[in-house]
Image 1 (cartoon, rainbow, N blue to C red):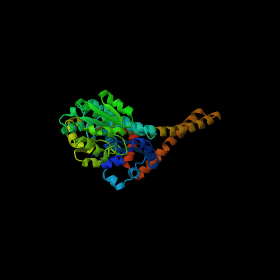
Image 2 (cartoon, rainbow, N blue to C red; image 1 turned 30 degrees about the vertical axis):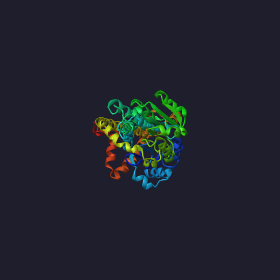
Image 3 (cartoon, rainbow, N blue to C red; image 1 turned 60 degrees about the vertical axis):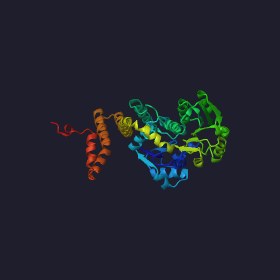
Image 4 (cartoon, helix red, strand yellow; image 1 turned 90 degrees about the horizontal axis):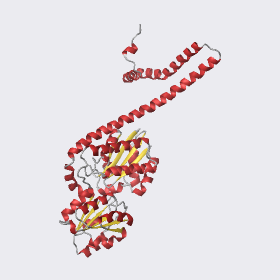
Length: 424
């Protein structure tokens, strides 16, 4: 069984490409089933976040071309365009890549912890959809174990930083006193929850959380003393908001240019700071062209994040060593499982031959045959049958000049010098 990890991320593709390749949560189960049916894939999982979309496959005969064609067709893209901004890892490389992703070593913010939960969500989604088989499941479990070890044994997670942290840090550069600001947070997922906590810690007490369902917005806003609204109430509060940070899974923009223009007129053109963390984007790009609007996407947070990354480089080196160890051990276990399967089938074959010869021997004994002679004949026949196929294969390999196969056979059957030496 071979593994493939194919995808795009913030390093290889701009946000306008990533949003086209993203898989909406409500369509993920259907996409998993479609890929299983349309490709030569036995097991598949999909990780889709604002910074990356990755396909993890287990295939008997890896066929990356078919995987790329399927992804391109599913999203209505040209194969060449997708290939130009994507990456591919296979077998041990795929294992190593997944472990690096789960540990936060491939994230925009080095060591950020959110990706671990997102990997678990991808695993659970594939499990629920019935596309997670034993091989990919083992890989995910090893990935989780290695990522946890990285968190435990290195300082990669100390002084947590994230896209949420970077967004709030940027807001502090725009507004000298965040305590006098009103913040509108659109969405109620983990990233927005982190943004809310960072803003609250910076003294922002006037926080409005807008979400598709009011209950989720209330769960996030109430502990912070904030206000909860539903999405269609955003126009009512937009004009009094100085900071707007959005991260939803909406397939269409939440804030359009016209809505923001109306709010700016009411604000008498006081500046507004906006960060669109979502992929696909929640805020129409044209909003960034309006006067008094400072609009940033996740790609614009790079500079803030780079500064935070430098403090984690030492820990990253130790983490990379743990990743290498974890991937090596997983591949060793996988190869051992392959040997177990071969041994199981060979044992079944040997037991069938044994049973056949035993039945023949029992029949001869029932007809009055000499027990010693019958047992000797059975032993000789069983030995010949067990050795027949290996003998034929070894002779063929020898005729083909495959000396390495003969050396391997000698090791396999433990034929040392003492075994081969004449007795006397």
